[in-house]
Image (cartoon, rainbow, N blue to C red):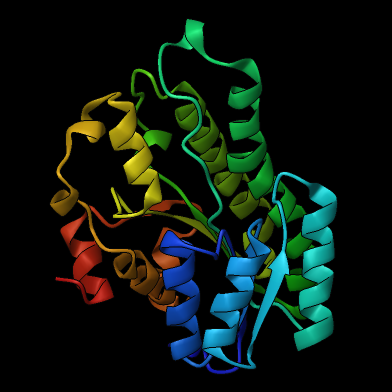
Length: 249
């Protein structure tokens, strides 16, 4: 897929989809930067990957930390080819009128503003290089309202529109921007949803969720020209044609 030697940054890389992604990218020959609030976990995973992995403690809700992380990546590797904005939280779940305002706002800070902070920091570096790829981790909740999920739905819908806007601004300048909507994935987030008991997703059996390595494989595919038809859009792993293209059929 042409990833040999490329520099790829992934937020929320300490577990779940993020961890699976950095391991898959590294196995494909890329140099990887693991950004996570849990710096110790990121350091452990980076150590397991090897010398071509860099762990950076970073909270995407803090624009300054994201900008510093991009600087650290470029200082270490000399460039930045792919950025995967994966960090996200499910947020307070339950009736809107009962939502904790601080927790609701924190979800927006991570899921929406966090994507903006990553784009704002990474895009200038990629544009200066002549191009790159920026991928958000989207969700079916970006397109379909779910009762009790107001913070998550609103933040993911906003991030989707931010993806579309960034594509409209940057595509002609060589920056590929798109989202991956993986469906329900067997991660800690699904455990939190299950524990909440809110909505139909909470009633799914663990066996109904796909493993994290499926979206990781999709992310590798999205870095290549085969995915160019989805620029500015969400690639949905629920679609059989996408699974076939990725090699998951």
